[in-house]
Amino acid sequence: MDDDGIETDAWASDEGPRADDPIPASAAWLPEYPVGRRQFFDLGDLPLEADPLGILRGVRVAYETWGTLNAAGDNAIYVAHALTGDSHATGHSQAGHLTGGWWNAMVGPGKPVDTDRYFVVCANVLGGCQGTTGPASAHPDDGKPWGSRFPYVTMRDLVNVEIALADHLGISSYKMITGPSMGGMRAIEWTVMAPGRVRSIAPVGATPAVTADQIAWSTGQIAAIKADPKFRGGDFYGAADNDGPHVGMGIARMIAHTTYRSENELAERFGRTYQAGENPIGGGGRFAVQSYLEHHARKLARRFDANTYIRLAQAIQSHDVGRGRGGLEKALATVKIPALVVAVDSDRLYPVKNSELLDSLLSGSDGVKLVHSDVGHDGFLVESGQLNAFVAEFVEGIE
Image (tube, rainbow, N blue to C red):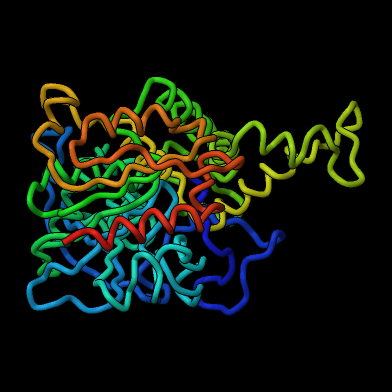
């Protein structure tokens, strides 16, 4: 998902990164940078699902909140970010936050996720690069970045951290958990992992289990990063600017971004036009769509981390609510809470049939709500009017 939000400020500057700025080896947030709106919760040691003997030590969670938690602790809404998102779901860019809120259209005063009415929480996921413990964080043994030592984490590990954060904040149950793409997947996992702790979910462009096709797309992205010689097996954090794995991560982003948009949108927007002043037919130039993809590759390199990309892509690959639970139908049979299942009709990464399957498994879902868009998966960002209307009506009906 292309959850860039608004591309602007550098960590401690009012000037945003420019196209000719050096590209850092990693754009992970580090403790010496301005904190911005982040708050921190020291969770401590976390058992990992895929390694029964494995404990991830010294887990710290970076999160943001808006609004006020009521005395009962039940007016909270959790907003779960997608692959390259972070805790900054809403608000302006500022020192400490390279981008503005990635879901400004949905979250804020008077919006469907109303920060004047609800206590809204969004945390950077485990393995992330924006303040929560991840590959760029200091290893507790030697203070050096985890790098290649950072373990494989599953979607369920990510949700376990979110459950611990809810405990820390005194949230008895979330009124709603919502999020797009990977965020929607975690909303679904919450219903099984923490029954009674979430009273409704609103997954957008998500699936109850990733498919072979979706695993295949992300496998190519992971391979592109690992093939970059400057990836150095995951231990690249001491590298100088422009000497990190930004080429490999850029290729991964170009592959991913192609799946975020629809064939029709790319055809209508670019067709076979040439980039201005360039000749791609034997002249060494580029088609306009190639320039567009390279632009998104450069943007991501200036705000993300290659190891985080790999670990979160693998976490998405692990996603299957029915895994080890007797299959999807059995796993979700006891989930009786209201569910708003939303799909984008032109989404080719998480197509409508994924949402239709989820709808059929959730007794609290009243059919798939379709966002009509030519854009593809990113339609949830572009067609905010349609999505906002669905969420606003849904959340009003939740006790």
